[in-house]
Each structure stands twice: as structure tokens, then as C-alpha cells.
Amino acid sequence: MDLSPHLPSSGRALVVAAAVVDDLRTPTRLLAARRTGPSVLAGGWELPGGKVELDETPLEALHRELREELGVVVEVGPPVDGPLPGRSWLLGERYEMLVWLAVVVEGEPAAIEDHDEVRWLGAGHLFDVAWLPADLPIVERLEARFGAS
Ligand code: 9L3
Ligand code: MG
Image 1 (spheres, rainbow, N blue to C red):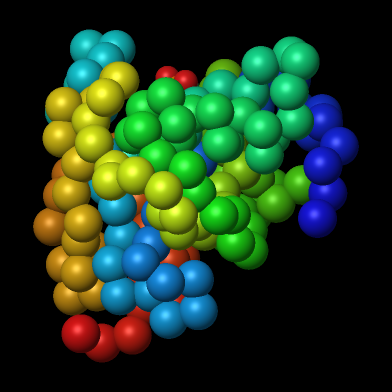
Image 2: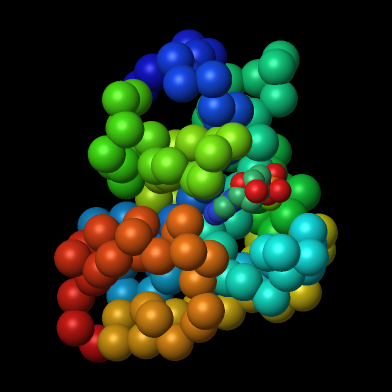
């Protein structure tokens, strides 16, 4: 696994997020979190995560964000590759985002910081929430990994 700092060539800042699932191999549930801010994004559902700080690797940032936002410790699985160089996903003009599958190994996901609700979505219900426009294509990509349930 690549632990080196990721340097986007695009000038966009790097964000990381997790597709938290119940099982890495055969997921049947995906965790969605509803943002409380900023106002343009509030109420939108996302894969939890956030900006990579200067002094940390993307995976360090991912673990920190999930601990801060949801109060959980996770095991990180394979990446969910995006279309950009470096396999990231475009988030508007200012950011690009790396995404990994992850499972909770300690704690129960809760809306501790930056969200007001978290929800487990079953395989047939992945699009029951209003995903942020930037996250929607990622969930569409994830759908193929889900079995029927
Ligand atoms: N963002 C979009 N989808 C996501 C995440 C974790 C973040 N799944 C966007 C929202 C903000 C920016 O990336 O514009 C930085 O995220 P944060 O640090 O505010 O969570
Ligand atoms: Mg965040």
C-alpha cells in the first residue's frame, strides 16, 4: 500500500473519503452521512472524510477523519478508483478525492462532527438519500460490488 504523501498535479487540494461497508469482500450495506455545512452542501449525503493536512499521508487523514467525524476505528480495504490521474475523483474546481472501502473495527458510527445523521443503506437502497453531486458517481461505481439483499 502506498503511504507516501499524494501530490495532486492539478493544483486541487486533496480530500479523502471512505465507503464504509459491513464487509469488504461482499458488502451488503453502505454508510452515508448527512453534512451540516457549509450551507451549499448542508443536507447533502456523502461518504465521510475530509481534507488531507500538510503533515499527514492520505491514509492517516482518512483514519483521523473517521475518528473525528464518526467516532470509529476502521480497517481500510481496497481503493475505489476514480477517473483522474492518481485514481482520484473530481470534486468541483478546488478539490479531488481519493476513496477507499473500509470496515468498522471499533465503535459504532455516529454523527459526532460535521454531520447530523448517519444511515446504513442496504444494497437495494443505495440511492435512497440525496447524495452530493460529486459523490453520486462514486456510489454508482460502488453499486457493482454489492450483492442483492
Ligand atoms: N467533499 C465531498 N464529498 C465527500 C467529502 C468527504 C468531501 N465525500 C467535499 C466537501 C468540501 C470538501 O470536499 O467541499 C472538503 O471536505 P470537508 O473537509 O469539508 O469534509
Ligand atoms: Mg469532512
